[in-house]
Image (cartoon, rainbow, N blue to C red; front, side, top):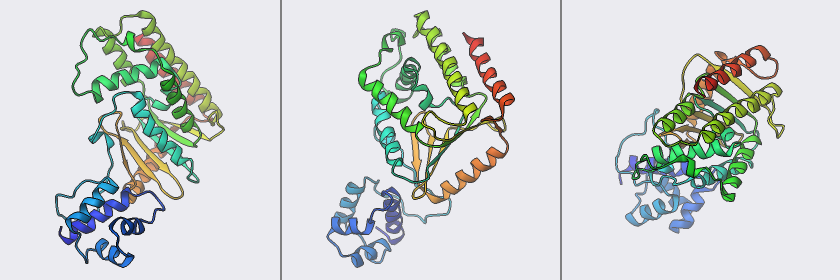
Length: 323
């Protein structure tokens, strides 16, 4: 391995390591080296041998660096777990998400800032049928690369919620509600879900009119729940909550978790798969982008009754137009 590539490799180890971990100490214990020998490898003075490289790749779960090039100011390291394995069901998707939210609970001064063009999964989980519907869509249109969604596969037969699913639905929703958050919604926030209902019904995957009606009712109830939350400016846990209406630009889903010790940026790729990065450059860029977007948005929380009522009324009308 050449020197530039080796330095870049150790940078990726540092980015993947948990905050506060003594990385040099871990590497030294793994390779049976003293700290001076470890730092000589980190700064490229001593070349890694094949065995050392293998041990580090396996221990830190990073890719083998195949391309040697200089790391520029525009390069960032991003983690996307679905590159190696797609979830096969809701539990496999929600379990690591819950673990990440629980880890955030140990951080100080956490604020979750969410920019979205689609209804948030955290709120969908409050409504089991709607949640099952979203996971049905993701399973057969995003995660499952082998099985075709044929006409014989009915969503009507996939509506039952197991006790394990119910646990994760409630746990993930409650974990998100524990944190202060601000959200920026585009007025098209319901369009994707409404289009999915319409498509699956027209393609013969929803045949029971009661299920169809309940899906629309769930969306109405979700909007009512959120309107009350926005008016109060707080979540049920008491955590502060702000909502902004975005008409300036149609964005993708983007989440900035601001914390005292370790901030993180998430964004969707091949929705709903989440990319994750702790790169300081993208964290700073995302924070500035959200700050700028907020300046061009309409605040809907607490005192903005007229704008809030108009916004949610428009969303209800969009649902009624398709019912």
